[in-house]
Length: 56
Image (cartoon, rainbow, N blue to C red; front, side):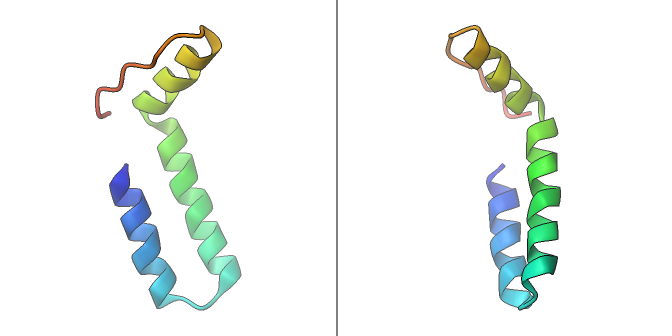
C-alpha cells in the first residue's frame, strides 16, 4: 500500500486546497482499510496474535 502514500504525496504537491486534499486522503484510507491485509490485521489484533500479510 506504499503506492497510496506515494500517490497522496504527489497529489499534495499539485493542490493547494486543504479540503480537496483531505477528501483525497479519506478516499485512500477507505481503500486501505478495505484491503484483505487490513482485515486480517484487525482480526489478529482482537485475537491477540500476529497478523499474516499476503500483499492483498
